[in-house]
Image 1 (cartoon, rainbow, N blue to C red):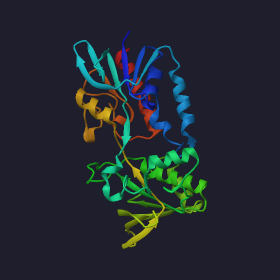
Image 2: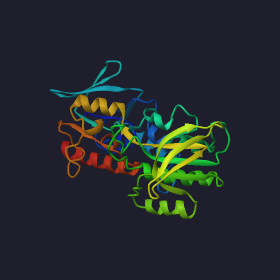
Image 3: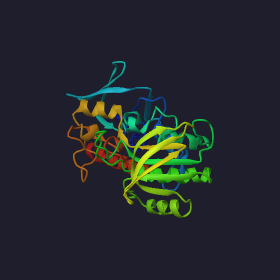
Image 4: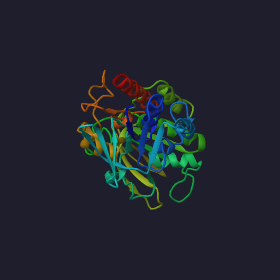
Length: 335
């Protein structure tokens, strides 16, 4: 029987493990102390506002399987092809062998500290979309002084579609996430004014355009086509914004209680490290498949497969569907 190792216990890794475990024993390696961290750090999922923990609980239940051996807190730092299979090395120097490996090491969000002009980590009123998710999850949105914000502004494309940061790609989910979060804010704080600054809104998924219309028509959210070039602190601890309304062709200066930076998706540290080690590194340090069309879960390295957002930005739904395709591809290869 083939020995299969999966690196990453997120949505992709768990879905692949659940399907393959019907016929094979699986070793599932996760550097964090628990699975599904990238789902559990969210409050609600678009487009239907399903509680993220509800989805995570259903996925985690799939790990209650005697054929899936979970290894939490184990950071795989090297991945090399040997003569008789694959060798995985963890942070302690211990090696683990497998006949086949699935890289499902996922993503992390862009480090907003790198955009100094926007003031993250400098001005307390500047937060990221992930920080806002945590507030929504606790049921309390406040400014840095603990007060209910009267104005919240969102800025799209922080760390994606951005030549200065080196990430020219679109992160795919930021537009719809901003719309989702803006609606969440208005539901929790109906008297708070909300602005969304965008380059252009890419509402590509089923139900996403409807969310955008609902945000305007039912929740009164203000969408401004323009970029914020600079953020600064005011004397009363608010955030002063210097922007441009590109539809009107006019400069715009305003203050807001919270500036939410919609940070893009980047390859995780593990994705970049292992993709390079295994010889499958692609653009921006994502893992590279053979072809996005017919061989998107195969790599140029025999016995090494890729699943989920380690390849490119994906939604939760896209990730799960891609993981299922990975499992089918593996079964076809080793059956």
